[in-house]
Length: 316
Image (cartoon, rainbow, N blue to C red; front, side, top):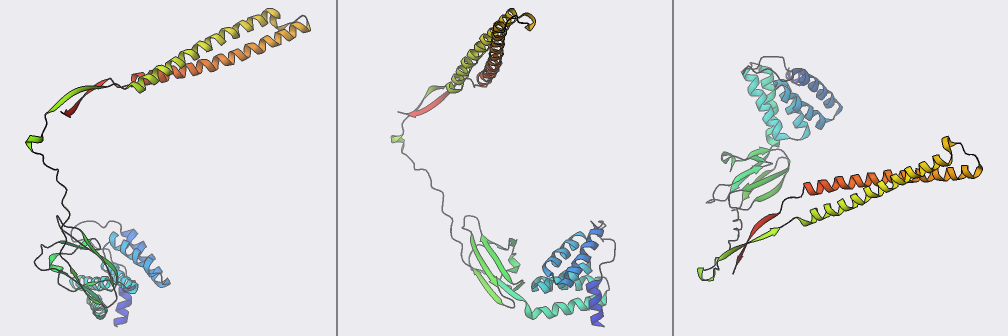
């Protein structure tokens, strides 16, 4: 009978029921899908992946059946303390829901884990101000100190801190079924910040201020230089432009409508046309460079901050 009840607890996802707080389930469909996938992973022996699926399913809908399967998965994974606490939570919820068989199975599973539990007792040196104790980034409350608390096997990081004290840290490896006691020593004082040396009034000298100008000469000078280059490039482009038009006029005069009377005129006409094309290309290039340089000059000069005058303090 008990075996049948256990099989039901493992395979039965939670029935849809209203939350007593009135809050709707966040994603019941997703929870069911993850539950089914986790059960398949357990059957394949992929316990770690199954546990992560059960955890997410429980987050989406905190059902008692999902919690039972999650505790069973933790036990298979070796997380005995988490499994023990999970089974006890299932038993308490099943009792409130009058699910007698599920409650009985959960309590028996929890009882079977008790001899396997690893326990960790954290103590604080007497007479010391109670520091902040954390185990795996979770605060250990004062009531939990000096008490053997069930913990999962594995590495646990213990931190102790207090205002004005140096942080104390210890990585502790817990074996299955072990009983460990960790005493946090008195925390050492943090080094005080150095104080500036005091000077006597007799050695103090009066402070005077003077104005010092800080003109941004570099940017403005660069703007002027770039402007000169731009003007020169525009002038060169203009020269080559007029030269191209002159060569083109000479070619038209040599052979009107591109009709040349002799071979010599045709050759001279071709040379003049080539010169016109070359000068036109030089004109376009020079004008483009000139315009770009002048635009850069405008940006540099406009964005140059105004001259500032600052007060320089000095002792004499």
